[in-house]
Image (cartoon, rainbow, N blue to C red; front, side, top):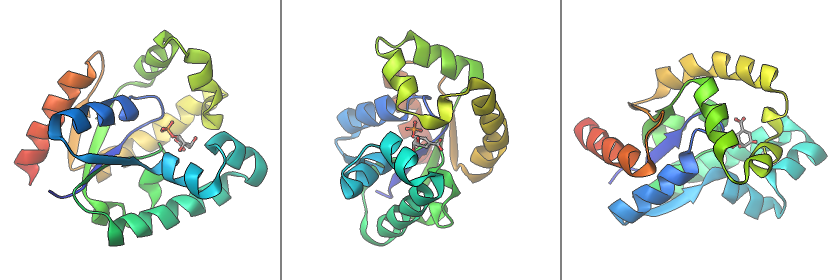
Length: 171
Ligand code: S3P
């Protein structure tokens, strides 16, 4: 199996879908934010606060190079800005989890830990700015994706079925 790389905006559900894919496909999964937090022994929010965004983006590039060279047969979930790394397409099949901005925010706010979900994401602090970021990124996400799945109002199980079917077709 080629790696499957989940991309998409913050809060769209990459983590939940990744966990469901692992259950169904019995594969191993890794998450780029988790890797960065382990490398740095601090949370993404703290890295942004202490070092600024550029430092974080450089770590993403480092992770991308390692993924390309050393990781196979793996489900890789990514932070919402990870798609900007130059070698993204060389890492695996790119699957975009797509949803309108308002639906994403609604999804986050419906979560029992909504406050925590918003707090840990520095780029979601200002919703007006986040919307601008979304509008700028969405065409770029679409241009890079091998597979696009509209996840709006779908369960992780439904998304997983659709993703695995489409990835198989794309192979
Ligand atoms: C970011 C998304 C976050 C995290 C960081 C930056 C972004 O990950 O990598 O806060 O630029 O969109 P999630 O997409 O998992 O929230």
